[in-house]
Each structure stands twice: as C-alpha cells, then as structure tokens.
Figure 1 (cartoon, rainbow, N blue to C red):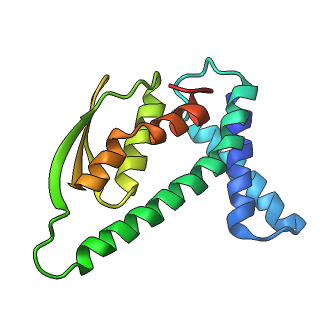
Figure 2: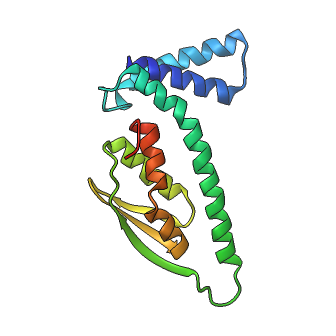
Length: 164
C-alpha cells in the first residue's frame, strides 16, 4: 500500500509544479510517477508498518507544517537581518552550541526536525544521534528557539501522529 501513497504523492507534486491539466500532461505525469515509484519505491518510508491511512494523514498534515516552517524561516530571517544591520558591537551575537534531546520516536521524525532546524536561518544542525542533537546557534534568541520544543511537537504531530 505504501507504493500507492508514493505514487499519489509524486503525481500530486507533478500536477502542482507542472501547472498543466490537459490529458497529455496528466498522462505524462502519471507515467513518470509510476516509473519513479517502480524504480525507487523501496527508498521511501523505511518503516512500512504504518497503514495507508496513516501515510495519507502525514501527506495531508504536511502542507500545514510547511507553512508554519516557512513563517519561522521568515521570522528568523528578520532576526538575522537585524543582527546584520546593527551598527557597532553586536551585543546579541552570541554563537553557541546547543544540545537537545528530542523525544521523537522515528528516524524520519528526527531527520525532519534536524532539517527544519537547519533551514531556519541562524541555526545549523551539526550532529544527529539516537537521543541527542548538536546545533550551532548564532545568538541567544536562536538558541532559545532551538531549546523551545514547539518545532519538535509540530514534527511529531505530522510524522508520528501526535505529541512527542
């Protein structure tokens, strides 16, 4: 059943990015999605114990998380811009390493959290372990944002079906 979810996800992405809704382009999209699913379907979703409904739930919840993450990126960009445009000695600039212990149960959840942190300006995930992540933060504000577990809770809600 997971291959059907992969196919539908790829076809949806094709339709959104192509912007073409005629029969020819939809056929090409379906054919391409089917081909990619056939040759690389085993690469996706290493935990295949989830049901089709659970996977579709993840797909449905993902755009909301993407919009929330995009807003966090905008807010972080504003903070970094403020740091960059502050004249003289930047008192807020305080590079530090932060260790967090996420409660996420799956490797994919930890992967999404690490990538989300890295996508947010001012933070970079340096190391991801089984029970711990090491993150470089450019300021106290971004370090506090990393320590706040709101991003982890959002990731857990989308990919693990609930709060972590």
